[in-house]
Length: 545
Image 1: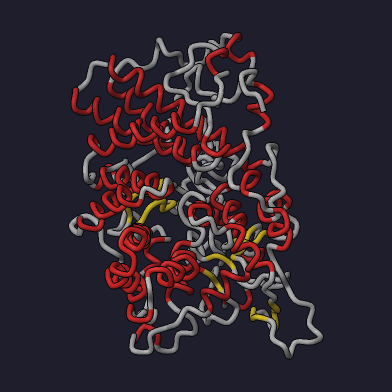
Image 2 (image 1 turned 120 degrees about the vertical axis):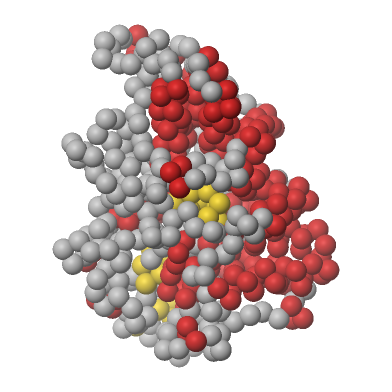
């Protein structure tokens, strides 16, 4: 059962933190004020749910961000008419790019709501244990949002709002040193880990758990290159086989039927139900606001009512097409591509149905080599087509396969060749689940196995997942430039809707290429992180760009 239902809290301070306007100087008699709200347990619960709903924002996980950020890594390819996504892959984005502004605003909105819970709930008369739990959940959301800000903007130096602003002047804070931001978000995540339950009953699925906080702590540590502490946190999750196990099928991690499954560690909840009076798709605030994500509509092919704004990159498509199937796995009988490939992308010759029609009829008319299947409503029916208007598929942010691969990275970094067998075993568990050929550890050193994880396992298993996961990976490994240069030199062709590499015999074919502009433009200082959005810079006198 999906638990979290968006409950709009119309407090006078519910605007985004980056917005400094005359709003605060005008009295709205219809607005719920802090004096009239935050009175009882019901108000506290509503405030907490509004905090969780901040994670549904378009700039966080609700569509725009999840769809567009993969094109800055090596897994996504923008359509040629989508200027916003094009700017990410060409690395021509700036402080006025939509996703740069939207992500900042949505994350700070969620932080504001979390701060309201943390500040107001202690004064409410309610059960003390539940009060402590509400605060721990709010601190979890605040810690996650600050981690995403820290890992996305200005090399980690962002604005710290530790309390609810009391006036518009309180919004205009200077940028905090990255060390202060890191310490603050770590305090929140450690507090959450120490105070959140290991699991919830079926009526409360979607609320944060000990495992979710532990997973985020591991992510923070590994991206700070603290491999030992990351190893410790990830091992806690791997050892809890009573809580977390790989699902039998990888596709279970991308649909509605298997949400909150044994592999799920944290997911953001969505619902396709449109509330009465709602005119817009996707998650929206307000009394008629619905809780869908626009991911399906943005990625689906035109024949299914989609916009095909972003597609898997040519490189990613070829990686999945070449995923080696295990001939001894009966699931591969008569299968064209691996289960992992089939669960991730739709190919014109994969022999499946896609949005209620034979896959080759889905489009592939404008140099599209593949479409995304992950988190798509391609199995649902709506007048013969999948429902792409507003999707209710939960966004899986952390799952166990991700933890396996990150733990393997940690032990390879820490123990070198002595960790190859253990790391290969984790990789093979993931591959076996999808009927993919096992790797033999005798053929690998720590270095070559880590490269296999970088260029094979992590992109194939996790493409388009998490919160900008692939870009964070490439940046952690200091491999952005290397990968952009490599990809810019690859040449492809599409013949009869099927992608392949150019060969020496293709003398009269104009090759398809990607990442050429990005490879020429990339510099770490300018492109590893987003800049502070122009809206913040213009309205905040304490930011000196």
